[in-house]
Length: 107
Image: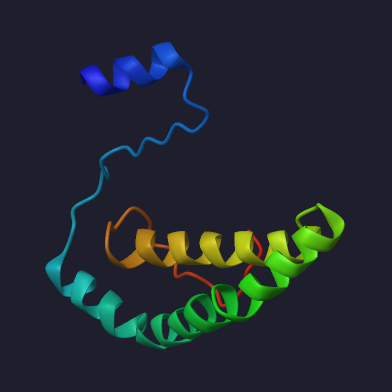
């Protein structure tokens, strides 16, 4: 609790809170969620591992050195992959939402 008070006093730019679910959590539906999300995990791992960190990292570096700016299109792509990853995690691991995460990068 002291850490939260410290961060509020300092003015940390990102604050995140999640309320405890007000519904009964079922073990069977949790196991079923893990089976449902396997195709998403395969695609997300491929996209985030190879496409986001390997290929564009060289493009980011070269573009930043040449222009002095981070490319907006590449920023949007990385942001979309991170959002998608958070939605999948919220659905399967933290059980915050019951909405199945779509195969899309936009919010």
